[in-house]
Image (tube, rainbow, N blue to C red):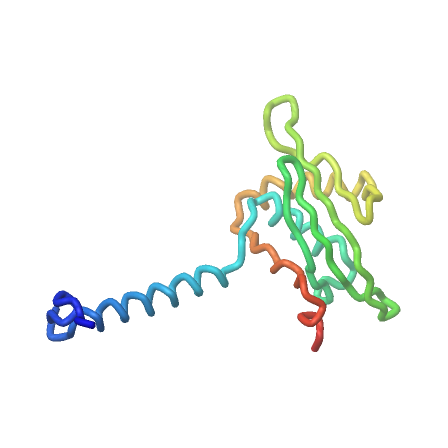
Amino acid sequence: MKIPAFLTDKILGLKTWIWILVIVVIGGGGLTWLAKQPQHATWRYGVCKVYLEEYVRFPLTINIEQGGETIGSAYISFTDVNPFGSQTVRNFECYFSQNDTGRIVLSKVTVDRKPVPDDLLKIFQGELPVLTSQKLDTALPKDLPSDLMDYKD
């Protein structure tokens, strides 16, 4: 079998097949790096994450398991440690809507499908304009493994 002539030509002192190999390796590394980068949501998810940290008694114990958003809401499934030391899985959802002037407002926040008290919702409402002007952490958590062996330590 004869090697094509263009593979034995030299470009900048190296044979063409070496350049092709370098491009393939660098391209594969770049694609792998891009695939490992976290997915990002919009500011709604970031705002909901801030409210979650304000709502939970011990925010340092929060471990976000799943998260995402729809057109009018953001949701976070998380585990945290309560004052008695037990770890529980909980759901936190923030619902957004437009008011009469067309501004986006926080209409409802639920924890395990139960709405938070109105006085706490008013505090969150007052913080919304400040939070939307900040750079928030909008990185979504990685998907849960589909194989049971991936849960093994």
